[in-house]
Figure 1 (cartoon, rainbow, N blue to C red):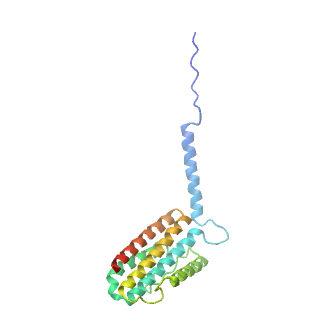
Figure 2: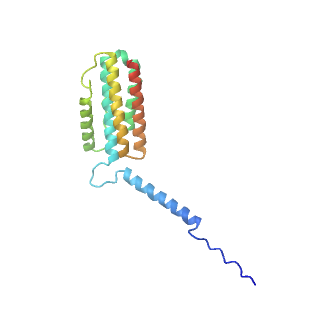
Figure 3: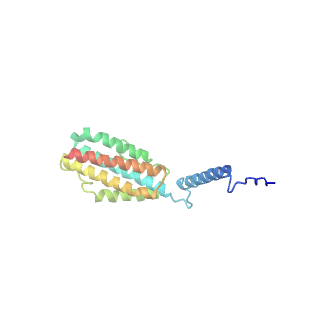
Length: 192
């Protein structure tokens, strides 16, 4: 008489167990990222994301001021520069800053004063290192070239900063860096 086949016992975990484990891992990963992004640091110092966001808002504000200086010195360029300046103002706002009627912006209240101070120091250093940052450009072509260089330099710095942050801020930095590169291209073409 033949023996009946042995009952089939699955080897390894069941499908439900695997799905439940995967869902739990996703939830845990989401919690970890949220704590990291929300500034889960202790001691009252701002997180890397907050410092990067504050620096980006101040850098964009500095760029708005450059546009304003060129527009004041070269009103004939208003038709070309006004749309680009408006985009840079939107960048300031996207990073949590504000641009008032006097073209000054302040970072949002979420970033601490120390982050703002260090960011403004870096903006001041980059503005003073840029050619033509403190003086009005000599002619329309040099004004456009100066703005193109400022846009490109800022886009390059933002692209470099992408490796330091993640999530929504990284996507925002990438988007604004790409817009800055396009602005630099348009300004360079207009200068030809």
